[in-house]
Amino acid sequence: FPFLLGAGLVGVILYELGMIAIPIIGD
Image 1 (tube, helix red, strand yellow):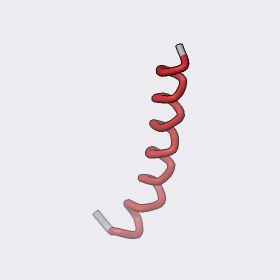
Image 2: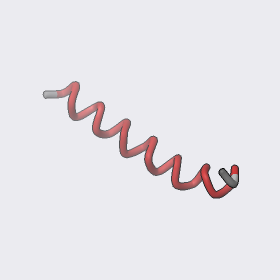
Image 3: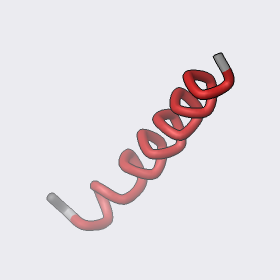
């Protein structure tokens, strides 16, 4: 379903941003 595809895409983006942000924040 498009919703699941969109949710998966958002999840990947948030995951990638998290991998970048977490080391910067140092948490």
